[in-house]
Image (cartoon, rainbow, N blue to C red; front, side):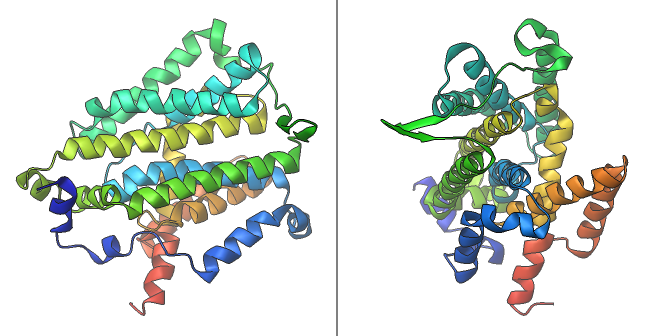
Length: 334
């Protein structure tokens, strides 16, 4: 019996049967809003770069959520792969190439391959021990970035690189100003979201959910649970590394903060706030997190207190996250 067939025999929880949403009018409206965003965002008091940051954090949180919400693995170290992608893009643009697509590919591979190599070690434990291993790995890369100052710039971070126009066709250049870069981020976000969607709709994705729901029963059925958990960890690492590379391009700068456990915690908060078991939950969580942080940081230096209060209230009153609450109300449940 194959793993997919074994997973299919498990009694599916209601959340598992309704994994990602099908293409609905709401999804189409979201796509239209994102495509036209540079035309209207200034009229609501926003700016294009903050929209780019929302999409970057949303992509990273959706990558983490593949592991956290759909496979059941709580990682507090995914900033390691975000930061590796960020540093790899910066180093490529500074020393090797002016090609932004090539730098993004290298950054994605750098973080994703490291996640793939570490996954078999990490998934040998579950629960709190899984989380502790991911924290330790994240701290390892954080201190390497500080100590290897000749390459990374140490505490000062990596500078000296910038975005360059993409030569799409002879005589046709994609200029990466604020608006042009937003559409590059949107393209990468769409590709990443589509890949996660396809994984979750496949037998592999359903096996991930089965691992989350009852990994002991899967072991009893002869399924290699650790192999599937490692696959989820690896795919998640590739997606998060892509987001890290985009973040380096947004700021034309990267630092050890992109590897810090604080960022890993932020990604977990974003996923939980929006709804871990909802496909678009991390996107909603990222929008709330980034916009509140941007506004609150202009008002007070204690902006993390505001974020913490919102998170506590969300956990108390919306334990399934914002999108989980909306989805539950849409089904008429109390």
